[in-house]
Structures are given as C-alpha cells and as structure tokens.
Amino acid sequence: MSAVSTKYACGVEYLGSHYKGWQSQDSQETIQDQIESALSNVANEKLRIYSAGRTDSGVHALGQVFHFSTNANRTESQWLDGINSHLPSDISIQWIKIVDEEFDARYSAVSRTYIYLINNKKFDVFSDQRVLFVRQNLNTEHMREACQYLIGRHDFSSFRASSCQSNNPIRDMISIELEVDKFISIRFTANAFLHHMIRNIVGTLLDVGTEKISPKDLIRILQAKDRNAASKTASAEGLYLARVNYPEKYAFPYHANEMI
Image 1 (cartoon, rainbow, N blue to C red):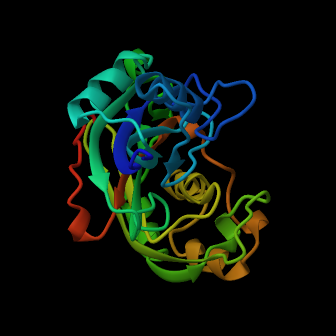
Image 2 (tube, rainbow, N blue to C red; image 1 turned 30 degrees about the vertical axis):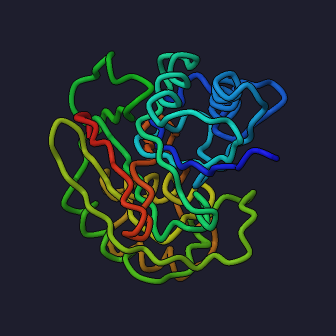
Image 3 (tube, rainbow, N blue to C red; image 1 turned 180 degrees about the horizontal axis):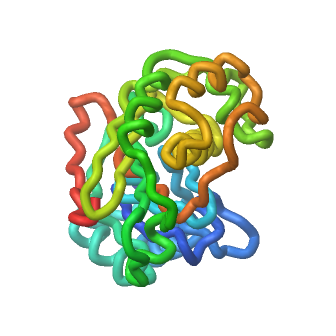
C-alpha cells in the first residue's frame, strides 16, 4: 500500500542580500535551493517547492508563501523546527499548515503586497542593504499625490522590465500607501505585479520626490505605455514581499515584523 501524499503551505521570511533571487539555479545560491535542501533533509526524500512569486536578487520577504507535497509523516512542529535547523540565519520558516490538493501558492493568491523602504535621514549602517538610502530631501507629499494616479486598473507597460514575460501588462493596483516614520514606507497592493514594476514605479516616485518631475506627470507616463517614459529602476535593497493574500478559508497566520 503506497503512502498518502500530503500538501503543505509554508510562510517564510528572508533577507535576499546574499542570494541570487528566489528561483533555483545551478549555482544553488538561491532562496529556493536553500529551502529545498533543508526540506529534503527533514523529509528524507528530494522535494520541490512552488512559491507565490519569484523575488529578484537582493529583494527580501516578510511573507513569501510556498507549497510542497510529500509522503513523509511529520507533525507541523517537526517540519518547522527541522527545516529551520537546516537553514542559514537569514532564512526562516514562520509557519506551516496542511492544505487541500487544490491549493497552489501562486494561483490561489488573490493579491500581493510589497513594501519599499527608503531612509531619507542620516545613513544607518544597520539598515544597509535592507533599506534604500537617499541623501536628497524628498517631498513626500508630492510622492503621495503621485501614487494616487496609479491606483486602479491600468496598462503598466511604462513600468515593466524589458525582460518581462507576461503577456498582459494590465494590472489592478488596489492601493498604495505612503507613510513617514523612521523610514519612508511605500506599501503596494495589487492582484499581481509585472517584472520590476514596483522598482520602476519607486524610481519614478523618487524623481517626483526630488521635484525632477511633477506628480501629474505620472498620468503622462502611464499613458505612454513606454518604459523609456518612466525613470530608472530603484535598487532591490529596499523591496520586501510583505504578504500574499488568499481566500479566507485558508486562514493562514501572518507574521508582523517590527521593522515595517
């Protein structure tokens, strides 16, 4: 009699500074490779994981989600403690939960939330590679106004990378919230994002903040549907995948990081 396969969903946080992104590569210097190696050690079988989205090199996560299926019989605490004991200190599984066979970390998601952090005060060595440092004073009111022109359903071709493989550039931007505290925090929630979309938007918002362009220029940039109309790509270091949102029936726990 064959063992029964069980599907699990997991939440993970990581600092992406020392990795070549999420997606597995031959070099094995990726988040996915690290987790699959740790997971396979605990399961005593080679396992593959499937994420809600692929983060680029240098991008961090507070709420990445992935799923996997296995015949191995372990309790949730055994999985959690076992996997984390095999992971480096900059990757940590926060929760694990059994899910139905229909669940897919990517396709079951209804929206995603990213946060971009900017330090516009004194340089802080402890936030280096975790927050973008901008020396010039930023007009955050102008940046906040510019954000409003991006909310709603739009063709975001002006903010997609040339390497973006999506067939459809239209996305539903549900909300953009800009808050000023220790850092400037810009929180983006959309049904999905194009490759480099947030970093290209942030690069453009920085030009608004330094008054190189006006908030209303965002209307022109959107309508151009041309990457050359927008500003340069902001660096990866300030970007975090904060949360992946799913239907309420899954009732996943969410870990709130005090840094955000």
